[in-house]
Length: 250
Image (cartoon, rainbow, N blue to C red; front, side, top):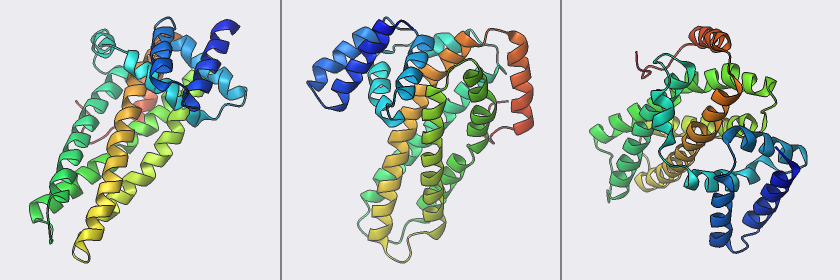
């Protein structure tokens, strides 16, 4: 990517991170990002990290990119054969988003409950959702061990670095949710509700955002930079060795 565009991205990020005219700057960022393809954006992000920008500061850029994206995901998915590494990851994302919707609705219902104990149906449902979210680990492992290294071998290391960082935080939060669901609400219902609300809102908001960035930035970049069908076939074999989630479509 030419230096002029990298300089423009650097300036936009500086202004986004300092909160300068946020709405106007975000609109300017969206207009600029419409002129940048995912692969170039990924390379520019990597250059910014190498220049000393903290990876977490790139989230402002990702947010602006998310607002700019349209219905490109379904078009990309339709061009991939079922069983393709990216097609499978997208399908798993669709199921994980359903889990997040369930968690969000269940948490809201529990927060409206004035006093405990938690209904058995709600307790079972929460435990099931938390187990499914923790059970998504093979999905993340396939990304980290198979997909990300192929991108990094081609010089795209900024987005994988950000995604790995978010994976680690999400792993910790999902385990906390599972432990909370396993412990139940018998001791202190109000304390349980507070902990559930914090954990659920973090997971729902962060994981939805994370999935959007992978679907609309990381995966299109992978399809642009990995052109060899033989490499994708090797990646599929690696994914098969790692295994899949209990909810992965057949």
